[in-house]
Image (tube, rainbow, N blue to C red; front, side):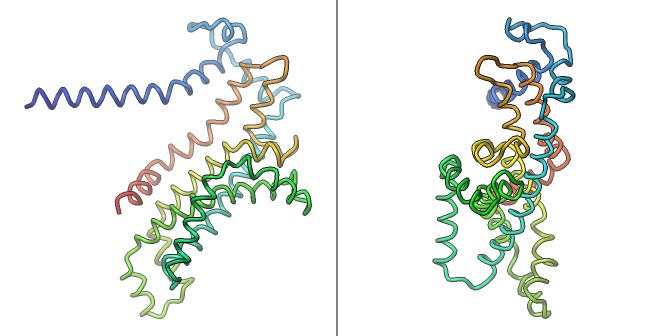
Length: 276
């Protein structure tokens, strides 16, 4: 019996290790490519002399816009995340804690799922026309609104799960004590769903950080985000592989920092939302 258990453990670890290698290999390849020269990269050399030429060109070259792209992505990512969190939290609290008919709840959640399944590129053309008509094309505000719209369905579902699982007894006790709706939301609900807020905010920020097709349509050079900046290294006749790999490596840093410092909150939030 013990031999079977050991064999099962070895098989499970082998499967997990295989999946980890498959997931991590693209990241390791990108990071290694960032430290290679263009010749080492094109020759496919596994052993090479590391150098920082790609990073220097991306960060300090006068023709590089990566610094501006990085700041643009930070502004749009933070702005859209705050907007999505506020709207999703209020909407989820209203749907699950106020007395709405059941068809309203199911209709809104069903429509949010359908909207979330629509490819963003199919909306970009219409959004460009709308933003241009009101003067929001090539602005942070226009892109923040677009990213918030794209990520709101996912955030609504996540926050809905966490707020739905807040014990009704706590809300009813606060109502008996005379607390109004804003006080119940601020003092009772939000402290309990704090892990859910952390998980939702980080996922929203990462999705906004990685978004490409809508940013391609709604921005120009002044407001272009990191994915667009990376794409510019692939020109019609030449591809700057080393600079592209260096820019891609730098673009991973914010997501890694968030995951390192908020890992416990993310895991706690996702697990609690999944098992309750």
